[in-house]
Image (cartoon, rainbow, N blue to C red; front, side, top):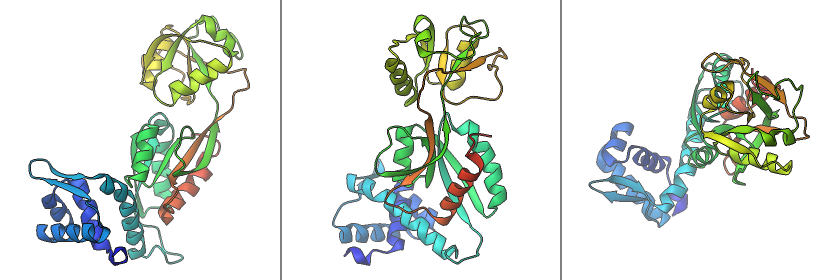
Length: 303
């Protein structure tokens, strides 16, 4: 029966999924291999579904049901860890490990400062991070691989709750010698006659294509790259302009060549950077503390 499920069974299941073998799970949990095997078998019998495929040559593989359960199981174990640490008592210090997901182009602008400032504010919490795309981060959230994630409020699933941390607006990136560099601000229609370097990384490519299309512009894309700094280096060498959301404080490329940024004159909506977590799982106290810290330190944008 489902009401008889134990945290021990869930810990065996999560450890087996993460290690890929019964032997590895047993070593991680410091129990016997037979204990893991029996605990997992009991869990499957009580749920009435097979959670893992057991193959001698390939080890353990999650079934569809196992993939559905792994995220909630990790969430329950995190909450149990928090209770055991006494985090539910008022006035006690926060402890434990907090894994934060971060969108790849946001990470360099916010995570180093957050690692320092949150560690100073909550020394009992071990803050780690993982990076990924929007799709990858949402999957990691729902699978329990990270508790919260900083990402753009674009194409997010209804199963992900989000809170806006700060707003940012796109800008035009140019070489100082570009014909439009002398302008104080640039209308999107003016970009139609110039080559573009496209940051070809979702959701940027879709977002900027839609923005230009709304202004009646079909971009002349000369080069595409998934690398933020490659975009900046190509622009600095005069291969074209680019549209970007995040803006480094140092306006030079990796090669030391100068760059200029100009605001978009059109009335384009700002892009929200949000903190997200699974809608079905309340954040732990340390995750809530991290969210409050982000609101306090990033409300004006990256440091």
